[in-house]
Image (cartoon, rainbow, N blue to C red; front, top):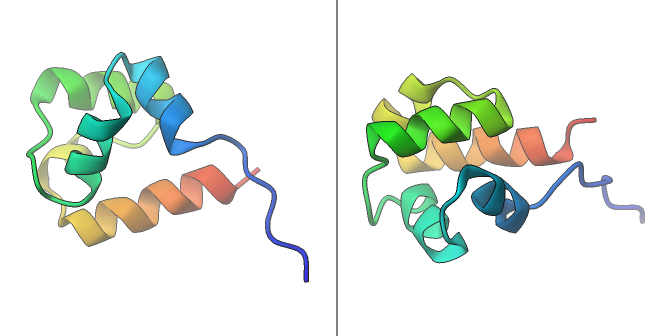
Length: 72
């Protein structure tokens, strides 16, 4: 069974946004809120609106990020 091809990784997204992968994981799992400045950088890297990073439930954010990673 073929798995979908990845466009990028969470580690690369974090690096491009100038944050550590651990901090990015904390945002994705709701252990830390996403600061506005980081949300702006993540928006530039992924195209995912900054309001999503700030105000959505972590599960929704994870789903959106996974969709971004696996969409070509």
